[in-house]
Length: 170
Image (cartoon, rainbow, N blue to C red; front, side, top):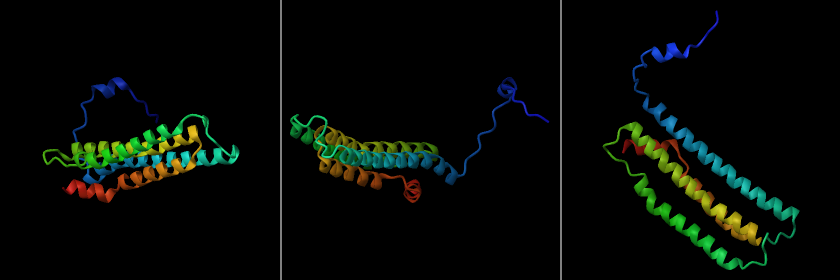
């Protein structure tokens, strides 16, 4: 008894009726990818930390790839950009996560997923800026400060089942 798949027969069959998905399963299908992105961002933050520590240990003392360049304007730009990103998240978060009562559950979950992904990705930017500062100027303290900001933003905005269930209730 062998199984063979015929795409022509499959295309000729009428589509299965739309079955309403269990709300918990529907929530899980939208939460899982957002949580995976959050976990990947945490892993990338750990990777950045490992890279900084390896460079500091191997190239001791690490003075950066362009230590003679005027780093202060770059530092101000990086910290200013990080502050603007944090402010943008604080301002946009209530708008992004506002529930529209006219939305059905799948549309609301898609919007919640997009909002979660956006805040997670924006939260990683300070660490990337800190890594850039470290690579250019060699100051690990700048990296650690911006890494801490990214870790805090990731922790605050990490998608959690209980929070999503509460959001879905209204």
